[in-house]
Length: 97
Image (tube, rainbow, N blue to C red; front, side, top):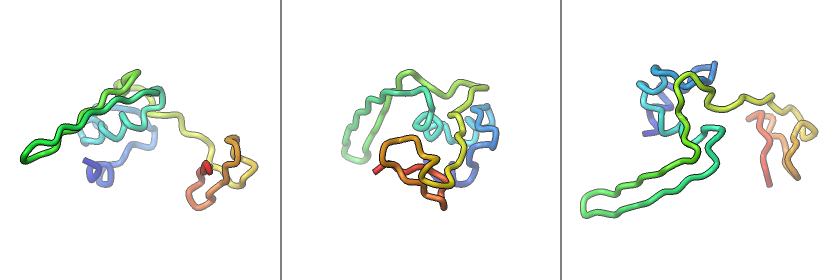
């Protein structure tokens, strides 16, 4: 499932399109969908396979919509707005403790 993300990625404009869907990265885009705040999952172990299903609320993956808002990369700890976060300059992300 995640190998598709490595091969195709998400377009720079960060919109969910039919091309994104057809590239097989819909599981990733749903997991990171900005407005999805709740998740419920179930696992079923069978003799020859394991099945996992998840529901997200509110649902995501709406064609033509932004997957998430792209923020400004941090360059120092002062750029981080979360409590006790530090800026990872290499990743340009604020990291929570």
